[in-house]
Image (tube, rainbow, N blue to C red; front, side):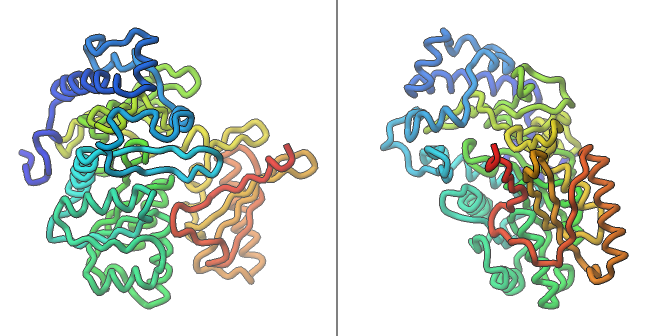
Length: 438
């Protein structure tokens, strides 16, 4: 018998598949009706002859048009709003360094629902009001800061808005405030542990940490396990994106067997990124999300470009919300080198298998004499770089393992710890200089 205390909202988290399907149909019909207030969707729906009553099952979402990031940019800033601007209380925006940024609007109801979703995620992994939650994430336009802040407060925890960077201060907060949970990107947690080691602090003995929430940048299962071993606590994967509010879209439960997507908030599809047709469960495809509980700016069949697969629709934890695999990468982040498709996560997976290597690495793509080349720079842990024979042997082993995975031979460079730049936010893993020559 499942303990109801394991669920923050048992009336939503413990829905049967039949109940989830019925709720999704009801909310999708309401969303279509509401989207008629958006100039963008009103035109689309009228052109396609779409009406709310056309939706009779969740699968009928396929009758609706896709929405892309380019649609948000083309209708910048408020062309996708479904409410008057005076009903919106906040917006979040991308950087927009290569054109118009993407803007997402929120009403007060949207913010309340967002906080509820994040609180549900944190409760699911065992956090309670007596915990101390340290949010080591960027605030401002980046949704990770405020999203987790309001979610942790909604749950009732003492919340430390530490923000990103200033690692010595982060560690002082952890030890002085009795922090039990941290949210941070995986690469930054690695940096925190490095500085803890320098300060002689053992997180297993000298802190009260019990939960790590990680996300915002792609990471392999190998890196997650390494982080768990570093701190001696479980690290749970979080998935979110600003177009869907931010964090709180999906989270792992204690079983750690996939991300639970909250289907009372979103309709989930996995499609072939080329044909846009559905793929069978278990097959990797592009994640498509439709919001069904948003007021200010609903998004219909949004192409996330993230690649993943369905793992199941039931879980020993008692939740029947669909479970997806960790993101395998993004269709638009794929590197094509000499005709071979490569994702950065493939390279990380191999590097993390070598205990001599740290978690900080950089992939550089260049064109030399009309040939595309890849260089993988990776820092080492406790390893003597002055021993040329050992360096040569380890370099050879890493190169061979990478070649077996990506079918190309990269140039591998081993570097001292701390050589590569440390990012306070998402780590920069790839630098592609080939465009200079194109």
